Amino acid sequence: MFTLAHISDIHLGPMPKVHWSDLLSKRITGYINWQRNRARNFSPSVLNKLAAHMKSAHPDHTVITGDLVNLSLPEEIERAKRWLNSLGDGNDISIVCGNHDAYINGMLEKAIIAWQEYLVGDDQTVVHNNDSFPVLRKRGPCSLILVNTALPTKPFDATGLFDQLQAERLEKLLSHQKDNCRVILIHHPPYPNATKPSQILIGEELFRDVIKKTGAELVLHGHTHRDTLNWLDGPGSPAPVVCVPAGGQAVGGLKPAAHYNWFEIEAEGIGWNITQRKFGYSKRDSGISQLDSIKLL
Ligand SMILES: [Fe+2]
Image (cartoon, rainbow, N blue to C red; front, side, top):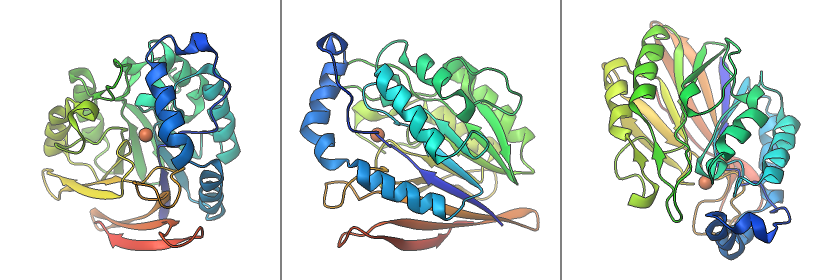
């Protein structure tokens, strides 16, 4: 059995010292949002306990679906790199970026270079920017396929983009990897009405069309900070699409408290058995325990 842990939307805090000149951009709106909401609802100790619990369970691989930082400040990107290093190396962890990792022009590329070992493909071709995706990383029986939807947007806009070029490449990759358990990592939810219009994935219909043609065994995303399970039509069985609450979300906020998901993956005949176990903080206390278990495939 292969075990895959999934956390997302780390929003690593506390915020480093911000110089006023850093805020002469969209960052000003994110900074105000951080001061008003995230500083209160996100806790480094919640995240650290969750990450320690997950690490102590020794997953075969860990995936993180974006928003490692908040304003894409260079200091945040460096801190996130150190945090990733504390969790494991690029053999053991795969990531994709979220809209907060691409907050203003040029920062997605800087984050990608800083976090390269966690998103470079098996062919070791350097990943530079959106045009380098999707990326293939084979781990155990899984073909992890990293899709990028993060791009800089205007203030109050947290949309993502899945473009035609990635759609064509994703279709090819999924077709070539159909004998493996194909797990897609993507930040934005790739189905309709998942968010308010200012947070949608532009091009989600292209993504759905690809899955309809090729299928996939599991799609993991973040962005909504919610505990959700949806399904996308495939040529055979539908593909489960799973989101996990944000990794640092404290108990008692408007969104569910921090979780990680634990997937147990086993080949069965010509298909796959996948069980999802949810670990996180319950509403009542600060301890972490298994909250639910679902057989997905
Ligand atoms: Fe987020």
